[in-house]
Length: 168
Image 1 (cartoon, rainbow, N blue to C red):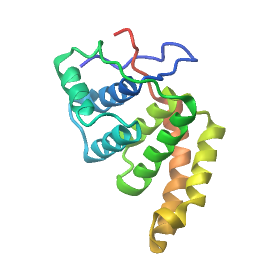
Image 2 (cartoon, rainbow, N blue to C red):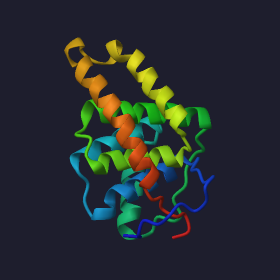
Image 3 (tube, rainbow, N blue to C red):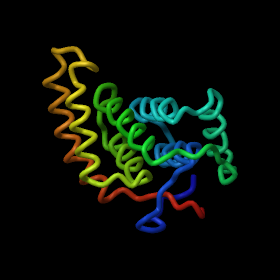
Image 4 (cartoon, one colour):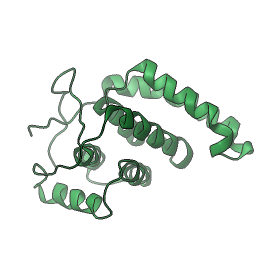
């Protein structure tokens, strides 16, 4: 497994759908295994990125074989990056355990999409406004607590997460 290294450049962003999924998968696999939370995030990410049905498996196989450098896909626009990020953040809040590994996945996605604190907070506020539409009323208080806790935790992890270099 290639090591995780520092961010290549402050303005570095990934706008290739397959490479976004590849980088997120490589991060999740850095310890050699996928937790249930990491799997859920990757499944949601693949769906949110509109990857073809066989694309995630092809990328996963390429990572395992060490032959991932040739992976490429369709471009993702900046506006869609925000939608993808919001969908994955929502999935994390509702469907995962919010472990450090899962939070690192979200923070890493945020770094790849160059989402600043203000944008992250705006996305979180949007999720809060949609709350009654996406969760059962009895879950709203717990969801809001998770959302508020996660905003703070993600800020800390975002500042410390390391990005995989494209040149490895």
